[in-house]
Image (cartoon, rainbow, N blue to C red):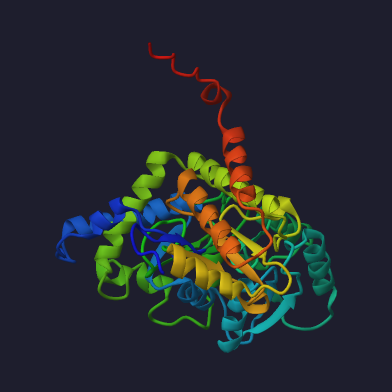
Length: 408
């Protein structure tokens, strides 16, 4: 019998749960798209997206998902025939590179392992060898992701940027932060990133449909000679004086209302506090995985993402059976293994509008599903480990509150 009462637990890596406050902000009549309030809304959102990206550069808002802003970034800085390098650490940087190849760009890949982050030393060596080539077109851009949601691996973007500089290379560094922005520290300017792309449906807690690109000065200089520019994505067109040019047409006003509320919530909590919350939630999930005795896909805990954890199911267990059972019996939606991990792993999303009790509920549902399916995981082992992790993460003052006096 399927459980239908209560709210579904959405624990996929995205889209994430949309907070009630964001839904209420969207539940309002449409407004005049040419009026002052909507113009002010656009200006404020673009300013505040740059604030979240941590850049003095300009941000653009697209009616698109993450794949859309991949294309937006590429078209604005590259030309047909340009060479780029993709940094593999899972599925998504490679997917970005595949999009570039379809647009006529020459794509090379620094091969990686889905179970580990890109190694800065390997990148530096590749780029030094590339500079030593006598002939051939220069490498124009390097594409990477901060968090790959297929593998749950986080790359050290600051260290990779330093490796590019140490190699004396001037290729643009372009980074996908779809699965990390608003959840984990990201310093676009301080880390030397030229182009960043993100989307609304993960850490930004807004329904799918908005994509974001932030462009630094080197990217804007490259834009002047980019041969792949097209009317919809073009930065120059979107810099025009008319409001409709900011969206290449009608603005997605209800998504903008939601985004405004979501950003206000992030700023009210404080971005440093948001990052600390995601760290606590991730630590607890990883503790649960250890309690279950299962293998995380990411082999090095130092490079485990604070937004999604991919976990191998035991040998011989089809992970899709776990997903189906959790969804149908407990109203729990987990992510499945994708690409080379299909049928071998489950992915637990712990990002966005989420707290400790929701994580414990998710982990409890996973344990129940394991038990129902006869998987050899001790009931309560993961939950107890997660509870202990949460308790240890509390400030000492919070842990030391005296018990209530006995009532006589």
